[in-house]
Amino acid sequence: MTIPIVLESHENRSYNITIDSLSKLSFDNNVAIITNPTVAGHHLETLLSKVTAPNLQIVMVPDGEEYKTLHTVEDVLNQLFEYKFDRKSILIAFGGGVIGDMTGFTASLYQRGIDFIQIPTTLLAQVDASVGGKTGVNNKFGKNLIGAFYQPKAVYIDPAFLVTLPPREFAAGVAEMIKVAVTFDKEYFSFLQNADLHDLETLKKAIGKSVTIKANVVNQDEKEMGIRAALNYGHTFGHVIENETGYTKYLHGEAVAIGMVMANRLSVELGLLTSDEELQIKTILDKMNLPTDYYINDVDAFYEHFFLDKKSAKNKIKFILPKGIGDHVISSDISEDVVKKVLKTFGAR
View 1 (tube, rainbow, N blue to C red):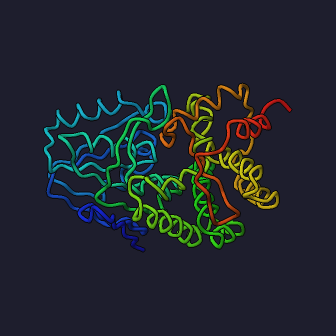
View 2 (cartoon, helix red, strand yellow; view 1 turned 180 degrees about the vertical axis):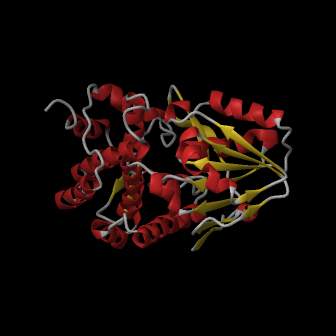
């Protein structure tokens, strides 16, 4: 299956997303595979059997969201300079969302920009992070606050890499599938409610549907000036949760799952979502073994964290809320009192 990204204003940056067994990749230029020890231990030998290049280097970065920093990117850049890479060199992001985000950001910086390819090895990266050109790193103020929109040259999604994925990591990826289903496609949501995602053909179909939805959105709005913001359903709340817990307690998809539950509660409060629809979404999250509860110790502090979100502007918080199942609303006009009322329901019981 091949899904095109055709950017309306940047046709020269259009590329294909291929969902299939990884084919042979041959390059005439310098190539560096950016990965971490965990992924390398499982899959690097397989990738090396597929890639040929006159100068092929392996760059290892530490495994974990806490290493998604400018310091790590600088280390990678320094290694590329030591390898004497030039402007025609290519980076391959081989790992999950953290690897993909950092590799893309590094590619955008090296000698003012070189090509990179995404070969995602986690479900979350395959259905979400590898598609659309968002790159970046975290800092003490929040998640992905330093970065760039920088599109890959190609994306190769091979579900076979998911065989070694731990159950938590798999579920975290399913959260992103549920995210796009709730906000864009009611029929897809119904499919996920009954799907056995451990069946390879069913999984490939689900990955293809998620990627198609995201590709259609990115094609319309590459730099998130409009509809692409809807892909952040669950993220406004989820990023605060990740920040409060130091990026160590929850996987990204787990934080997004809790964030969706919080967004749903706000949607019910505003009359956009019925209690039955709220329950349907929570039920599928529970079924996929995703966390759906979080204790907010300080509502005021939690609320203030919203203003560090990239989607906030002019001292207003942009919320992405489901409007029924299969549609959404993007609003920057929800009162502080209403939001805090909802946040308090996640406090002392």
